[in-house]
Image (cartoon, rainbow, N blue to C red; front, side, top):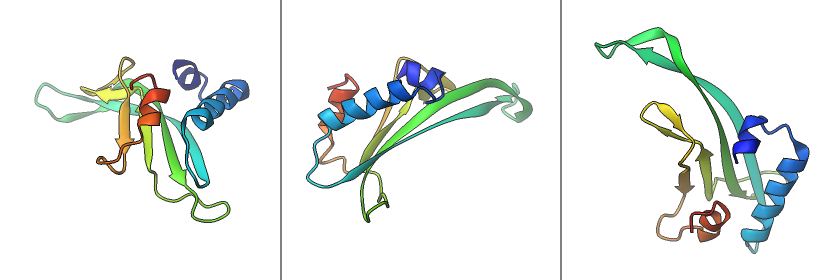
Length: 119
């Protein structure tokens, strides 16, 4: 995940390996899409009074992955699960944690946790 984030998802071999790992672990009886996005966010500085300053104190570089069932031939539906890496903790990027999304908390996709080394 670190390498994927650092290259901005521009390393095709690395992305193919990631997709292969997801397909190996994530078993579903229907077609699904694996969507991965990369972006940067300027974290605005806050003054001692809690007011937002206009300069940023840090740039948070992150990626979001969503696994979605297909609702049409090329149309992904609502995400069933996914993650944000690195986690965003205390107004900063946290390389030691991953934020996990599960659409149905009562029936989580444990294979996603296994894929990420968390389960």
